[in-house]
Each structure stands twice: as structure tokens, then as C-alpha cells.
Image (tube, rainbow, N blue to C red; front, top):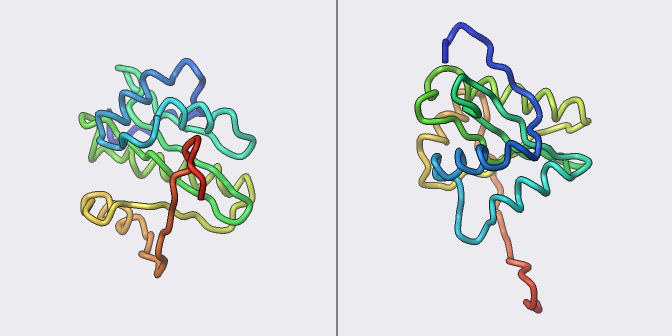
Length: 147
């Protein structure tokens, strides 16, 4: 990708699912307890969520999932193909995600990064995102689990 060119970033379609999911795998973003195909489909099917993709000569070169829960805008699965890294594509995807969230009325954006992912933490800090004094709690809601 040419650094001087603004990448074309647009909403993904259902046909993009295999390429986007392969990108997420290549970037190490998937985990055994999250089905990326389900995540992708739910984001595309939601009224206030989507997946944005950047396309290059070889197909999908980047993606970001965005959603607005009515209180905060959330960013997930920001991925840039290894061959396209350090080209400005990650920054362009974040700009597109922020634009989408503003258009949907989100007053603030948030994202979660695993504590040991120093590369991602450094990237987001260069974009002006700051660590928040928050503790994330969770519970799996798999079928059959009673809490």
C-alpha cells in the first residue's frame, strides 16, 4: 500500500466474511471462546454496529468492528494485514471508526487491549487514546449456564 494514498474504507458485506475472518486469524485477534464468524455476522446485522474494511490489491487489508451501545462507542478487531503495517492504514481505520461513531451519536469511544499486547497499547497511545481507570468484569453466557 502506498503511504501517500488514502485507503478506501467502506462497510463490509456478508461476502467479506471469509477474508475478514482470515485477517483476524492472521493478526492473532481470535480466541477459542469467541466465534469470529458469529461476531462478524452479529456486527453486520446490528442496527448500531458494523465492520469497516480497507481494500487493497490483494483484497481486504484491514478491518475494524464498531458499535454504539447507547452510552459508549466501542471498537473491536482493529486488524491490519502484516504486509500493510506501518503504512498508516491502522490510523486510517481508526479515523473511519471514529467518524462512524460520531455519525451515530457516540460521545466517547472505548476499546479493550490485553495487558500484554504492548504493540497495540503503543499504537493506541500514539493516536491520543489514554488508559482509563476501569476494571473489566465478565461472565460467559453460554447455553445451559445458570448464574
